[in-house]
Image (cartoon, rainbow, N blue to C red; front, side, top):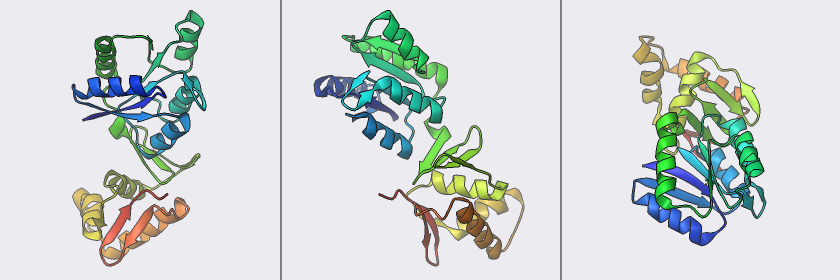
Amino acid sequence: MIDIFYVEDDENIARNVAEYLGKYGYRVIVYTTIAEAEQALRRKCPSLALVDWNMPDGKGSVLCRFIRANWKELPVIFLTVRGDSRDIVSGFDSGADDYVVKPFELEVLLSRIRALLRRTGDVSGQYLSCGGISLDQGKMRVCCGQEEIALSPSEYQMLVYLMRNKGRTVTRENLLAEIWDSNGNYVNDNTLTVTMKRLREKLHQPDCLKTVRSIGYRMEETE
């Protein structure tokens, strides 16, 4: 199912959009403030974002620029009553891919979403995040907060595997098989321990990276 984040404080509009798009296989998660949306984005990248301009805690254009700074390929559509040409230009200048003026037909919105996703593809799998750690698989770029972290190939592969399995315990045997054995590099258990130690140090000992004693490791969100 394709996830869409919808930033909208009008309950009726949000419900109608979510119910309609849900009939066509889209899961719409509604956020009523920009702060809620930013927090959700830091945890997970959706396939597409729908953004209203006027929100209780700020402007959608600010959120759009935040998205462009962190998830460059994530498609964004403005849904707003602001239909003045200057507003439309400002929306696109903020990084939006499309601009739909309220009131709008739900069928038209669906066609705009489908057309945009045909052009961009589903980029949600490109971006992984957990506990302030973000990973762009397209650029092989890892950040801890705003700091970019340089990792060795084995450290990077370990982090990717753990983040792809976020919320699940990964055994040490699975890590050895995935990172070293699959490439024909058979190493002993101590190599895994040392690599994990270095990864943790480079990521500033993150709370989200847990050790499951005698079994393996797990990445999970921390409050």
